[in-house]
Every structure is written in C-alpha cells, then in structure tokens.
Length: 139
Image (cartoon, rainbow, N blue to C red; front, side, top):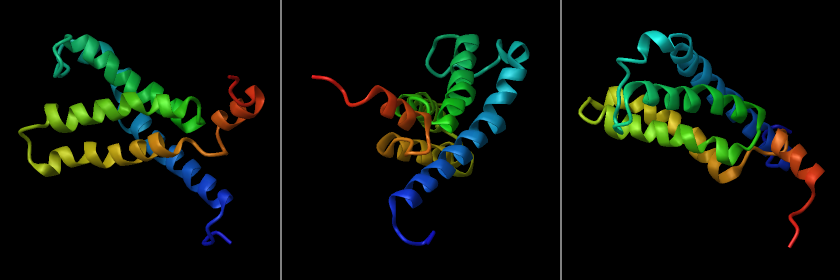
C-alpha cells in the first residue's frame, strides 16, 4: 500500500519531508545560533549590510522559528520563505567564493523547502486543520 500513489501516501511523504527538513535545520543549525546569540552577535556574517546582530537575528528566525512552524505545518507556504531566502543568501553570497563542497549544503537544504513552497504542507498539518475550520474563502 505504501508504494501505491494515493492522497494518503502524498500526505505522509510531505509530513516526513516537513519533519526531517525542519528538524535538521532547526536543531542542526538554528538552535546553535540561538543558544550562542550573545557570543556571535558581533562577529556574524553580514552579507546584506544590516549589521552582524541583525543578520544573526534573521538567521535565527529563518533557521529555528520558521522550521518549527514548518514541522507543525503552520502557515507553511509563508514559513518556508525566510529559510529559502537565507539559504540562497548563504549559497550565493556568504559562500560565493568557496568551493562547491562548502556551499553545497545550503543548496541541499534549499530543495525540500522549495518543494513545500509549491506543494504546501499536506493534509497532516495545522494548515489543513485551519482550512477545514475556516472554510473556503469568501468572495
């Protein structure tokens, strides 16, 4: 049954994608930045010219708080935008002159979040619960 294409299989696949990608970004990268915020605030990379502390705050938001929303499937299409932007900035600006093996991780992380931008969270998500409770949009 798991290898047959069905709405349930798609929903389970999107749930797995959200949990895996969100957890890896949040707890593999975002949590470390949040936990060491005060130590890193003055030396963090500033690729867009807003200052290291503000850049770190945006990175924490994109790497920790947004992935938590993605894991829950809460406002998923909106929640994937900051990580997508952050990962593009990391791959194209911060690591612009680094070899591919250094910048590759940013692009690998980018893929599941880009997929979720197009697909949404699926039916095993808070987005689906909210859609059922709020009903169809009114004209």
